[in-house]
Image (cartoon, rainbow, N blue to C red; front, side):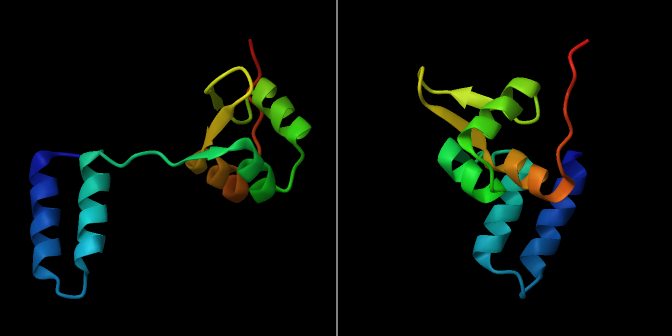
Length: 96
């Protein structure tokens, strides 16, 4: 997003009395690209998607969802990806 556009949006936010300070801060973080990803455990992913741990492992191997290895036993997932799976459904990425 262009810097000029960001400045205009920030100015409009400052003038709008219906937007709370916390909402303004959240919008500024998103627009500046400093929003941190929410990382969740495999157990939380399984609960949200209603799947077993084995299915989650198979989906990770198939490229449906990507995990971040913390150690040989611990793996974490991005909440955005889980939300995307819930809303858009599953799309298997096939290797060439």
